[in-house]
Amino acid sequence: MRSLVIGIAGGSGSGKSTLARQVAAAMRPASVVLLDMDGYYRNLTHLTDEERRHVNWDHPDAFDLELLARQLGELASGRRIDKPVYDFVRHARTSDTVSLTPAAVTIIEGILLFVDAHIRDLCAVKVFVDADADIRLIRRIRRDRRERGRPVEEILDQYEQTVRPMHLEFVEPSKRYADLIVPHATDNVLAVEMIVAKVRECLGAAGESP
Image 1 (cartoon, rainbow, N blue to C red):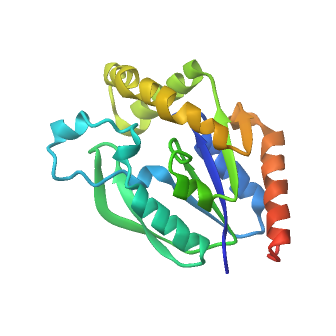
Image 2 (image 1 turned 30 degrees about the horizontal axis):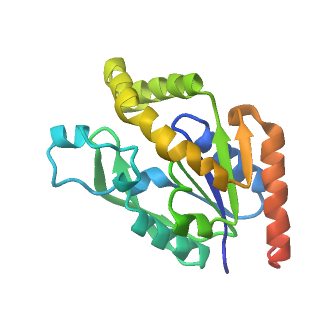
């Protein structure tokens, strides 16, 4: 069994994860597996905690794109993978992995998903989630305070120093590779319906059950 890969990219806080979950829920009863690019940050445990805090996590070099492309290709080919797990509080990859079983549809989301040509080529459907910068920043502040225990000043410093410049240099230009650009993804029912319709069309063309 081959898996149809849907790639969902966009800036930090744009609503990528929400859209991915909405599409996955709407695809039932077709089997779906969700994959996040965040798990593939490079393993920099050889650095001190202080050194890891100063890494530019929004640059493509911060990701193990080779491992991501290989494991995404394995899922697309119908093979099980052990996905790495990243700890955002410690800024380090953990020793744990998550076993993912291949499904009819693989949905992968990440800020820099379309920057790498190999990963782009694995995505049969490419979606870019567009959101205003102020909305993305507000969501990022709320998430980092709630889930990662970071102070507001630290969040704003990181946004100013790396998040915003890397978004302008890498994330925003990758929009041109998208098949569909989705605004206000968190409540865009029509976008979800369009993506699901396209996926079912692709599955039907491939002879898979939609």
